[in-house]
Structure formats: structure tokens, C-alpha cells
Image 1: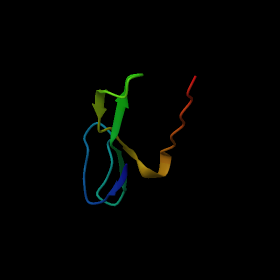
Image 2 (image 1 turned 90 degrees about the vertical axis):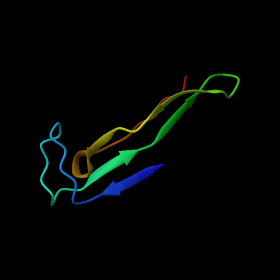
Image 3 (image 1 turned 120 degrees about the vertical axis):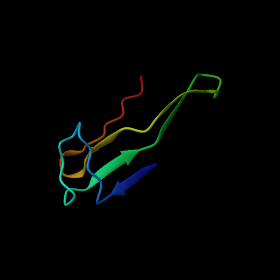
Image 4 (image 1 turned 45 degrees about the horizontal axis):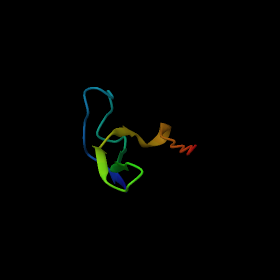
Length: 55
């Protein structure tokens, strides 16, 4: 799931309140379909891109 967040300052991204952030909620599952990882990374919306390669 993707969320766009405004009025949030993140010290690691060094953004301003005017710069939108994107938040990606991601669940990784093993081959049996059991969840094994959950992440909520943030990124600068203007510079954000997401690519998935499944091998």
C-alpha cells in the first residue's frame, strides 16, 4: 500500500513541510504464503520510484 504524507519533517530525509513523503507498507511472504517481513519505509515523493523484480 502507498500513502502520501504532507506536513511531516523527517530528519533523515532532510525534507521541509512543503515536500510530500511517500510511505510504502510492504509485507513479504515466504513460498508457503506466510508473512516473514513487514516494512514501512518513507521517501521523498518527487524522487520516489519503485521497481519489483520477481525471479
